[in-house]
Image (cartoon, rainbow, N blue to C red):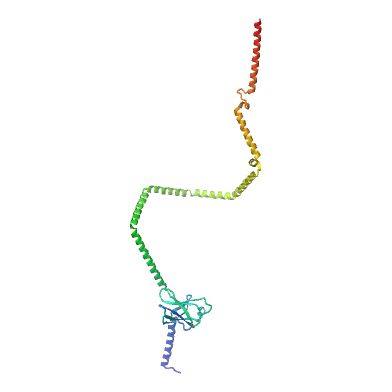
Length: 331
């Protein structure tokens, strides 16, 4: 069977048209080889949204916009979602129009709800507009500029109302600066001397680094020796011994304990002290009763005995002389 030229051209044209139509749909985001479900969404305004715009869910492209139609005060948008994703869309999900990026363009994002049942083919999704990021920034920037303008106006009013005080403050600052400069200039030699002393001190420290390290090493060794000698344990033992001694004294044990706790001993010592005071008073009043002192090594009793003997001898001699006188008179 032979085909004439016209038939061949017709078949080829049909194939080319079919491939072109499929390519156009594919470039527009519609894959004719995948089955999709159609849903409707109503918006008040869809500025920037076009047919073939992407439909995303969690950042993944799940479909595209098939048709946009103005119906009364609303805009009806038909979206096609691949059947593989329809079971992931609860019935209370929301279709939101948002910016596709800084380069412009709009897209629809499916915000999944929490309903137990999934959306059915041909159902109507709730729609809403997401505020444009650039418009929000522009609005916030305008508010920021207005606030800055009010702040600048307030600063200008503050400056105008306090110009005299500000001038006086500047003058005071200039005077203070001049005073500080004068103090620095007058103390320049002292500052240089201090810096020289600091340099000398740091040089001395650098020159004696070895000695300082040796001192630190000795201190470290001392602390090590104290730790090894169990100084804390010995000190604790000494404190325990002192506590034991104090407890014994408090209980009246030993001489010190008896001295502190025995009232009779205290009374005896008090009486002995009083007797000693009386003895000292009597010794001061009559020292010869207790102390016999002689330059020639004789006591008072010996001297008195000697004087008595001399008196007896003198009396005897006087008596003898009297008898001789009486004899002479009688003759």
